[in-house]
Length: 323
Image (cartoon, one colour):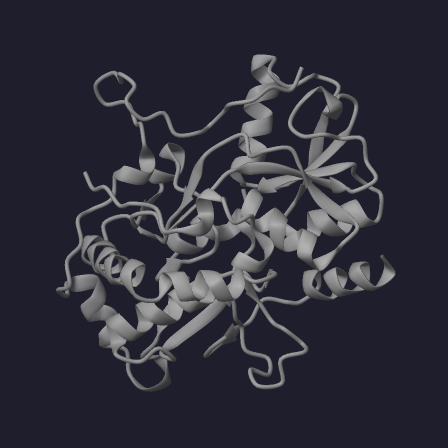
């Protein structure tokens, strides 16, 4: 326990940086996918299916990226540096040194290769969960590849690619805890979520609607999801709610914690970009189209498969549908 806590504290305290290489009575249901339902005109449904169709051509956004000179001729990508097997540094990997690595990092390199012709032509910027949208809107990054769920609310602020990963919210708690999942066992417990995450939005909405007991304390939020694991290890909270794939990676870091119950939402990660950058969105979708056929599975098998069940819906890339 002490070793695991120490490791996560080290990751949690890493400061943001740029480099050249390498969150999201109790009941079930929630912000999941509701395919086939009738929607009112103008109502957003199935947000993961609202991206632009793929196109391999350039446009003003891509032209501006390509026009950067010297060492600045790189794709600037907002990522996480604290999520084990998603975007992190492995201190035991002497080959990669201090490079970021993980499932999201592989995808960022593939996009850079397709856009700029060089997988290493990428500048990573560590972005906290609650700063992903401001970083895009403020032009600090060209895109965010950081376990970011596509939602209707977020589509008002940023553009998304088609989905590249399917997951769902799940409960993480100590193995010795009598918490059994997203159910009545959470009554009177303290839950940690990342600020600005779909996990926090879900808990807040369920509590307002009476689907989550008022006695559940959801006031603990943190900038980065890994900070929740540290809070759990220190006994400051009783459970964490986050995407199941992220929770599985955290459980792999600390063998004293485990996933409790089944996922209670269905969500999809997408690459987030600035609204109006249609050419870049279409180009990323073309990259994803090819990546699903060649590259996605190898990256999944390397980084995520060891920690996820063989029947997980995350075990293959989600189908892409366009508006």
